Length: 277
Ligand code: KIV
Image (cartoon, rainbow, N blue to C red; front, side, top):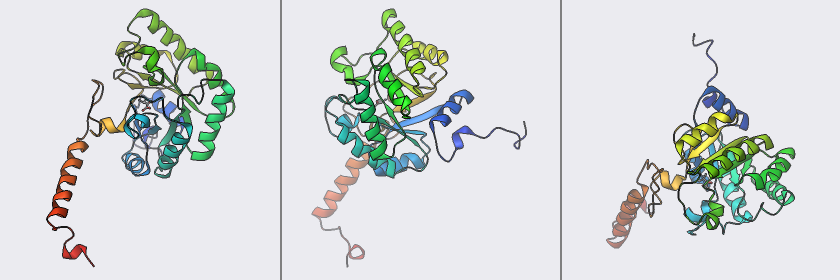
């Protein structure tokens, strides 16, 4: 095929939309997703070509220092999403609905989603769970809000699971996950996160759906991958799950830089004459 007749590169669009990620799945182009919580990082990730920025409720862990994602509030998610949206030109911004903001009823989910969309300028919301949230997904999609689903290890249910171990290893849970994935697709989700499940199951679910799947700890046959940016950059190093690949050791870089700063202040070599007025 000549260069003139080749199809446009779906990964090269000036603005990623929910249609773009669908086209990427259809064209077999893997989708790069990363979490972001603030303006400066969002700007860098966007310029580096990340397709989707997820304002994850993992902000609870990596920004606020909580043990779980449960304490995150809708107000806090709105604040983080506003900061991220100011930093992007190209990426699709998806915002997690936090624990307690959608589980009660479809109407509650809709009101939370509307608040996120109105007050932040982001493009979609994400929520966790299968059958119990299907009605809420339908309600939001009908109202015009794009929704990303999330199955497998859903951190908002950590006290139900009791551990952060791999989910759906057994046939009963795997069957439930297959059915939930289909239900979420039928309810109108535009994409689905699959977290910490066997790679083979993730591949099967990916092939069974027409919407894109985004994996985290789910092997390399999903339609895209997501990582918590603090993990990928080597900023959060207390515990590193097997599925995390560290692309930098910013913990070391920052510690060395700040050591040097402290030392320069102590010996008065900072500021120098050309840094003074
Ligand atoms: O909150 C988050 O960061 C997430 C990703 C791990 C998918 O939901």
